[in-house]
Image (cartoon, rainbow, N blue to C red):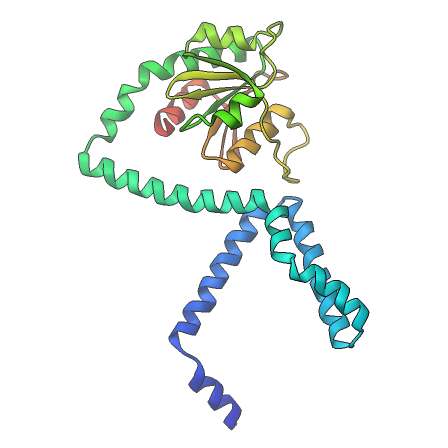
Length: 264
């Protein structure tokens, strides 16, 4: 082993190992968030752009170096603008994990988790019955369950209702001749806050081609927020459930009930 290798080993610390591992974890999380989306192509374009900049700089091509350098100097701001949804999703993912662990510790401390879930059974029942009925009649529906009501986000694109959730209300909203049947119903604390809300569509490239606007909207809103969504397909009557950008399909009303008890 030569002297250079010995010097490198002597300068290598335990903190350097931790540093490399942390960078690897961050890169893994970033990749998992943008995998299968158009953001991967954008990131490849950014990497190619930076590679060209390094090449022209090494070749001392002054004019191109100045041009590319100007773009690189504002690159961090441009990346924030381009990847704002991915950055938001990343921060929500971290915050959600912290929040879930904190709530789990709280309920374990009180020993009341089972009681809390039982209390919502009667409130969940009309939602399940409405989904069962709409599934049989193949009435398309999109229900979004949010932990809080963002007026600027939801109310600006939908009709404000603020009424207790009920089977008849949900069926009336999604009736095919109703002026509110297009869009999503937003439910907060078992109250229908808005109807006909327009949601952001997912830009994932891995979604099945049979997914329509309802499924893409359900995936999109769960990618950028802590909300969960329930979809009833107009074509097949199939009930689906979306969370964190992932979809569970072909659920029975009983399976949906168990899921909502755990989530709500």
